[in-house]
Length: 404
Image: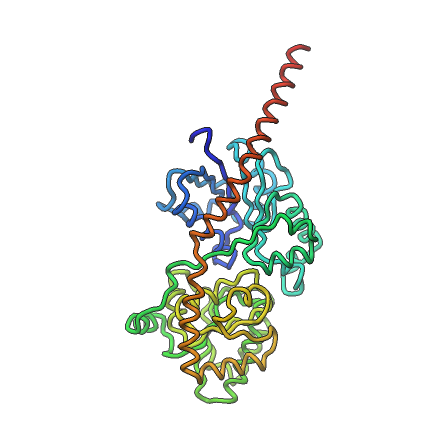
């Protein structure tokens, strides 16, 4: 490592074993940085459980540092107590905390914070108790206040930060959208049929991908699908793919209805390697989430050539407008009508396939990486000045002590 290199630390200890959108974002960013930036010296902090995550894929300017473990208490202790010490010892210019919370203690490193969404503030009832607690909300506020730069994945999140945390906070926000991986692309018909057979799925299905939790409004999707079944007996199977979240009791009760029991397939968590096939085989993709900071699943579905229905609000309207059918959030009747109309209209599906694949191409991981590197490098000179000032102060203290 040369003395002139910019040193950046990225904290990936928030990763979960079953990936959510935040996990996709964090891993995607590091992989894109590894492809595109061979000049910056990166320290990637991970839990010991994730030591093999990037096996054989990181270049020499990346060091994987497994200094924490996954249980929340241990991870928080690492984040607040160990990470600041590691930043000093590694002489980091920039420390990037890409999951809502910064360490309370800062030294000479400049701090970058990623806020993925503001739904803990805007829709607290849709979160577990911890994520809506006064302590957590205060920690997010304090982290935003201490950060040198706050990165958000959409203009919608920037607006929400200004609304809930004030215009002064929003002045340090940089909007950097995430990317859509190249794995998500349309399948040739023969390949799609082969993959469908492997997944034991019917030739036609409506697909939802995402965590089963209140904010994603799976209950609303089931209500719309039930209306669709009442209208037409040939309605395709509804396939739900995603990890179990919290508050799914109502979803389970709805799934137990006789008219849905035999028509809805629950796949649970689907590994990333199987997702492109799952998307590509769908006739329509439906994503009725109340609010999103970015929204990977609809963009991934569109990249695979799947006509998509989503909600008209938050980042979904920003990212999908003109390339997907958008309905008011929470409007079950409108969602049912959109599903019915799109399933009946082959020409409209073909139009959305073309528009969707084109729109998804605008979200490139390499561009996401480039813009993060620009943020890091812009902050590095300030970090270098702080280190120099600290060194001068320490040297002065030493001289005073020697004179005494």
